[in-house]
Image 1 (tube, protein in one colour):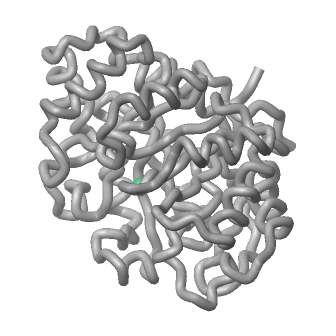
Image 2 (tube, protein in one colour; image 1 turned 180 degrees about the horizontal axis):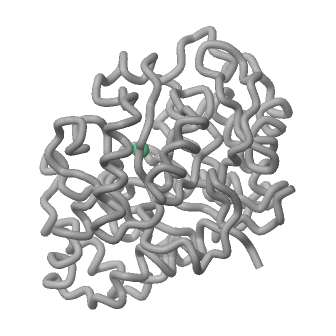
Amino acid sequence: MGRVVTVQGALAPETLGFCHSHEHLWINPGRSAHVNPALRIDDEEKSLAELIDFRQAGGRAVVDAQPVGCGRNAPALGRLSARSGVHIVAATGFHKMCFYPKEHWVFSWDEAQLTALYAHELRFGMYADGDASPPALRCGHRAGVIKTALDTAWTAQTRKLFAAAGAAARETGAPLMVHVERGSDPEGLADFWEARGVDPARMIFCHMDRAVDDPAVHRRLCRRGAAMEYDTVARGKYHSDAREAEIVAGMTAAGFGGQILMGLDVTRARMVRYGGTVGLPYILKTFLPLLHRAGVPAETAARFFTENPARLLQTHTPGP
Ligand SMILES: [Zn+2]
């Protein structure tokens, strides 16, 4: 039996509770904020208040999708979880290349070094540093997922990173999460990993609802066993919540309700405690009733936030 690995330790999956499978609770000031100012999330009291709002609305767990070396702050995630009572599943892995300065170690490290780093963070604990220099400062909080990011360009650099992530997933039994960019090829990535011995059932493709319009691609990936993480909720610049509910209802009707995860993918601009307008309780308070009205039964919708994350976020080997 697997365990869901949180920053506070490994949990029996059934104790995870209502879970958002893709959020951002903290991003250090740095390159990400330079690319997009909404990607600076660095006020512990504000992130804590947002998490407490989430918990009061019925939320119990969050996946923080910020990987090592890219603004992640593992000690802050540990404190936020302890203080809020919300389980946090943290990420090792890598983000889009635009979020790293050209002298970053993500470019100079080879596949074996990256594999060892990811596996170490999943097994023994994350590093507290890594943005401006190679990770060196250990902390006790373990990562529970391997975050990766699929862009439109497939280069020797991205090939190295995806190979390392796949090897670490095989070695540790941790799930793989993929940021999917519009115009990229998620099925090609599934082929790449599958050829390296990774079971597609361990792959979670994120943002598919705004990145890939063709529902046939979603269904083909699900037929291979992969999961879809949908989070284009309260994001009018992409589509309405009614359209989001339609996408989810369509996948549910096609028989893939057991392979859907959801979240809000919040940034500073979307968290109420940072002055934004959406807030972490939005799904619980607003979106779930809408989904129900769109024809998704409440018990099916509940699976996206409880049963599915409890199964799909498991790491299949015991930790230390
Ligand atoms: Zn994200």
